[in-house]
Image (cartoon, rainbow, N blue to C red; front, top):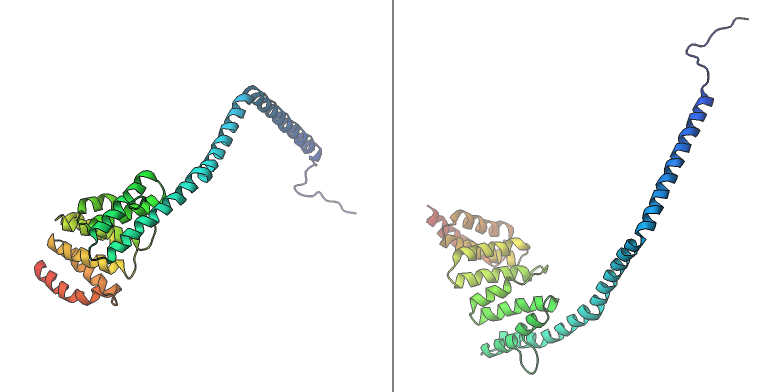
Length: 253
């Protein structure tokens, strides 16, 4: 019977491999034991410091939660209660034939209640104080104290779709009244860029176009008016665009 040698046949090395694996495994466990011993020694050596750090973190977390629950939340509720009275005077002023005295009550308080200015001072950092900044700015606008209006409206910050845009736009109005058209132009742009919507965007695009034409920003003004015509054809400002386009294009020639 014929026999043949298998090409590439090699003698098994499984025993050698097993011995090698066992050796490597032993080395790994020895290394782990050594590392564990070192870690235990380090923990024992530094356990007081570790406990101090853990305690400090725990105290900080508990202090923050306690501060939020026992101080911030009651302060927020109290501030909102005070804000309601000031806002009542503000809203009365908006519909009154003699609004100045009511705006002053809204600002400075009355009937034993805080005004907006008191709320900003006494409840700084609360949501109520932030809203008070907006109402202070609007009150000063109506009282024609444009510089004060700018100061407080610049402090107001909101994610509301309309309020922040209106705040920027009102700052633009104040700068316009103060005969500072470059600053007004800047804030009108902030107003229409902040959050696009059918109400504030065409309104402040139009105002930016008008005041831009006063300071030689003809190209920008034309672009703003064309954008109203294309993107907001149903807006009130759209009905005014053609006249202003013709006027500004003549200035640009």
